[in-house]
Image (cartoon, rainbow, N blue to C red; front, side, top):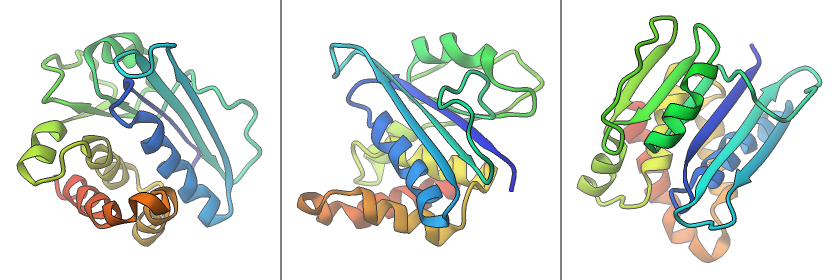
Length: 177
């Protein structure tokens, strides 16, 4: 296993922190070192939100990801702010429903997924974040598939248990694109 240093970014209300929590929980299930560092503006909904997630078999020196090898962008300000910090060879996943811009960088593997549109068309409104996690999983293999599904089951609160199947469907949709 290589170390995974992911950065997920977008607006508050897009589920950035929840998506990061799902990724972090895969490390807990697998018994490896994990850090999850949320960051959001005081506005919450509509403000900026980003989340650093580190998964490693070794001790994690800092929870802050400054050179991600995996980056998910769900809005243009986040794309513009963080695209240049992605490590060469890193994976960039962009919600192309919300970001029409593409990167000029040729040293990263960029994927443009219309996640918000896909979520709406498949009755999964509000789960674009999870579709993008499915795509990140497909491109990086940061855990086993069943581990990812189990992380969703653990992270969805009991009062929203009826949404577990929808989240799993969203993961599978992301894995298929």
